[in-house]
Length: 112
Length: 114
Image (cartoon, rainbow over all chains, first blue to last red):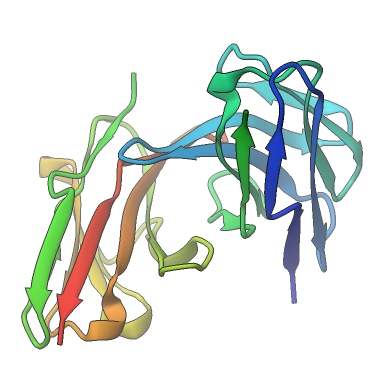
């Protein structure tokens, strides 16, 4: 069966520091991969998605970037974190266009 | 722009009460519709989905949802809730075409009192 792993579960970083959140999927090949941010009372906002290695689509302008160095690996990064980057970040995968998305456990990011 | 509206932000019910959570979307073309649930301390899980065919969809744990195209709605229902149904429920839509955009509603927090 397919599984999705996301780490770390929680992270506390100072303003201006870099960020790297990692997500990996097992048990499937060539998944579509997604990064979301979940804010209380605002649902989930799609940040990035990828349909293949090296292919990244950005949904909203922001201080973050995403990369897909391997088929089942999706990384969310920042060179310099802002206070507004605090939040709950979720990685997800799907088997293809229009298919259900399956979510990781999320990373709680706090910026001090 | 496409959007999903969940009208009830916070619902409190007693056990055995019936549940209906509203969801409306704003896209006029072909859509795939989903309800996700997030139990306390757990990750988002797919509850049910609609792609085509019978507009009444059965999901896990006794949940069902009805797609009414003319009303752009996909309401979630359960005849008799249990305390274990306490969770946050999210409606989501993927519009037709070559897109992966899953648009979420803001969520409904359901608290079931024993």
